Amino acid sequence: MFAYIDPTIYKLLQDQGKIVNIGEDGLPTDDGLRPGTERIHLLGPIPIPKVVDGQEQTFRWYPFVRRTQHEQVLDIAGRLRDEQNLQGLWELLTAQMTVNSILIYGPFEESDVPLVRVHSCCITGETFGSMRCECGPQLEQAFSQIIKEGCGAIVYMSSHEGRGIGLWAKGITYILQDMGRDTYDANLELNLPADSRDFRDAAIVLLHFLRPPPRIRLLSNNPIKRQDLVNHGVEVAGVEQLVVGVSDHNVRYLHAKRKHGHSIGSLPDQDPDPGK
Image (tube, rainbow, N blue to C red):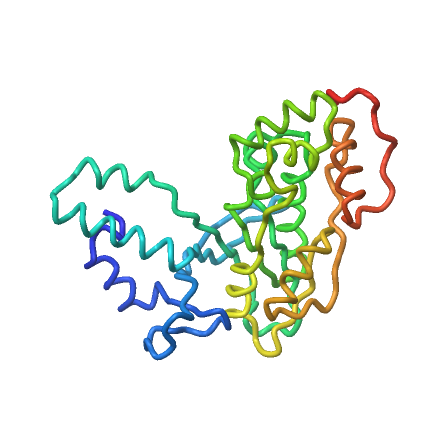
């Protein structure tokens, strides 16, 4: 059973140092002396072997979740155990609790200015291999560049599907885009934010692992991402572009991103056909 269902497993994880609570400054808060500051539960490290550029590499995976969500699940699990509601327990296993991740490679904690990619989840681009966006190629290129560096991290924000609107709404926006809207206007037409992503939790987890002063080189085209990290205590010493996966199927999408401030550089002309 999961740790939030069986308290003995949770205690085992704590005793083994495999789960830690960290505050907004990235420091552990297990002593309970700083009430109200605990924001993140961090699990790991868990070895993740992965083939990158034809060579097997091992990353250290740390899933993390917001404390408020974790405590809500713990409370529900406790009540379900008391009621011996087995069906409810199994339903809880599939309940949504936003779990993000950081994957670390090499001596990240000892590096002065490591390379970091903060990457938003994109099931269509990464799992389905869709060419409507460049997310899949960006993620793979980030892994490749970090390996070449010998050190770095990818913070994977699974809560950011569709720039934060979720997969179902993202599917609707795709249909609207095929009718001629751009990727931002489609969100707004659903009365949703053009971009509702929040990189605060990514910053907190980076602060936990970075040596002081916490400085990174950010692999990104998005100035908002950089500013959000800076606003939450992570110094961005440099920004490196990540322009890959450009195709006829996503050039309109990339033009829209550039129009909204992304540093993408030159692009092929937009195809007038909105279905592209």
